Amino acid sequence: MSEQTSVGSGGLAMRRAAIALIVFVVLTGLLFWLDPENLYLWAKAVHVIAVIAWMAGMLYLPRLFVYHSEVEVGSEQSETFKVMEQRLLRAIINPAMMVTWVFGLWLAWKGFGFQGGWLHAKIALVVAMSGMHGYLAGSVRRFAEDRNEKSTRHWRVMNEVPTLLMIAIVILVIVKPF
Ligand code: HEM
Image (cartoon, rainbow, N blue to C red; front, top):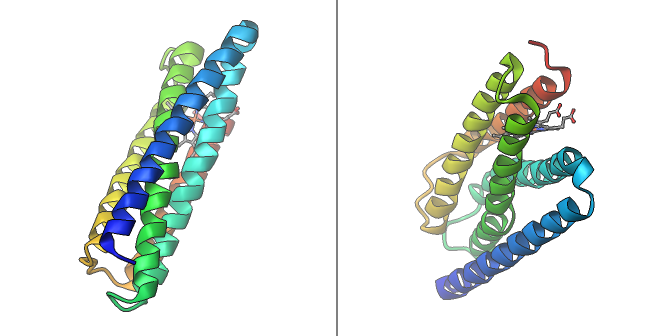
């Protein structure tokens, strides 16, 4: 697959992601308008849906890197992985992260006035998750330019980081231990 095709499909994925975001925002606005009494619950539902999409991508992308780092640079498989990684990042992971943050911050303000040890700890861990997001996004670019220098073992270890962060975040927000 040529680089041009991969760039073209990346642009298409971005357009689709932008359209999906707009549709999402319009639908959410409609729900808020139809059922204003349950605004908080609707926002929480949207937040959790976005979290699921973000986490699905964050758990799958390093797994793709594990497979990608095992194949030969320039091979057909390597080119296919590039397209899969770029589409996953642009069409799912990036927009899902934005929606998670926007609705999460709104919930934190509306429901808790940004108070609570569990909330501060949760936000700190979500910042760490976003840092991991940035690292993975940079790695998509490095793989696309055939510049990955990390081993398969490195990606296997990296694959566990979002999982551990996610477990801690979910316990903090549901149990609210402090
Ligand atoms: C800056 C980002 C985030 C902020 C400020 C934030 C904040 C919040 C707040 C205030 C709630 C409502 C809690 C309640 O009503 O009891 C909530 C719900 C929730 N959040 Fe987040 N969140 C963020 C990101 C995340 C992430 C990354 C995850 C998962 C990995 C996550 C998982 C959840 C879950 C599962 C709920 C539902 C909890 C429940 O209803 O008991 N959040 N979030």
